Amino acid sequence: MARAYSQDLRDRVIDAALSGVSSARGSAGHFGIGVATAIVWVRRARQTGDRKAHKQGAARPRKLEPHRDFLLALIDDTPDLTLDELLARLLDTHGVTVARSTLWTFLDRCGLTFKTYGPPRLQAILSRAPIDQSASTYPASEHAPSRDGDTRGPVLIKTAASSTIF
Image (cartoon, rainbow, N blue to C red; front, side):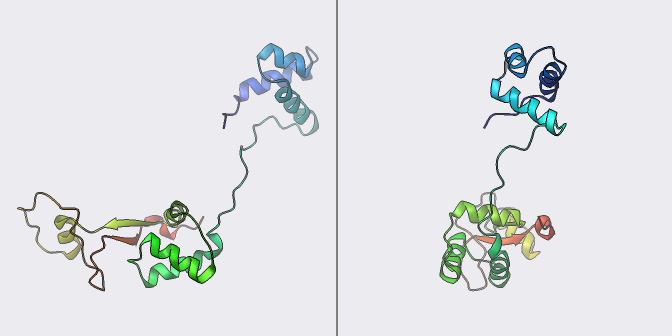
């Protein structure tokens, strides 16, 4: 989508048309903008006095917002769910199908993020155990076990933004 024209250009086009120096069409040709654009700007300035650019694009409804409480409660009960498991439960319970990226964006807006507890240095920090200085590499396959002994790495954790409601 194109950017909005500068406020200075808007003001010059509107002032030229309203002062009688030229019409909206003449102002459009003089300043090098579209005729329809100049006509809309001048009409709006005459009718309402508004010269500012309006917000571009329409407000998009968020598909997962009605299921916010369900998803957050599910994550609180079982924080080691993967995105695919969350999608499957959402489909089974509410019949809602969304893309993984939609769920990820929703969780990000809720202040939740996936963190991998794989590297030994991070595991030591989390368990408050002494750090093994000999571990200079961190294989990607090492993960902290979940409550069921599952070694999947990513788990959902709350970040500082999770208390913010938007």
